[in-house]
Length: 143
Image (cartoon, helix red, strand yellow):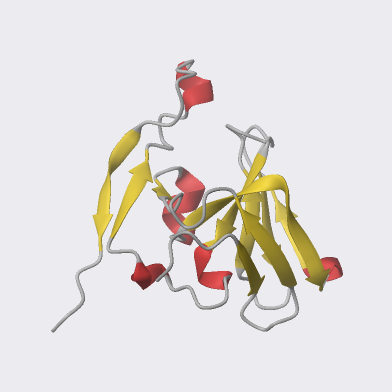
């Protein structure tokens, strides 16, 4: 897997929502999060600049979900339910993109992933140094 890839096409499961993403730092930004929402969705996210996502088709099928402070915006396909990307609360200048939606990328391609401490969100704890690491998630394929 080429972690330095910058420009990828993506789609939801049913193919209704199709988009192009220009990644901020390739796949090097891959991560998980422990916040209440991310725990349930279980996705691997990578980063794109705020202007780095272009919806190519199916924009009308995108649905936005917000909770708690309503600052973060989570987008998913209203037909198949797949989370595609989100604008995070901590940094609205970029998007988190579901790596599994990106062409040629699988969440199981990442041997180790940092897991951000979303339970203790930096904006709640007034720690403006950025997200804290909660741990590391490893994928060890069966032989």
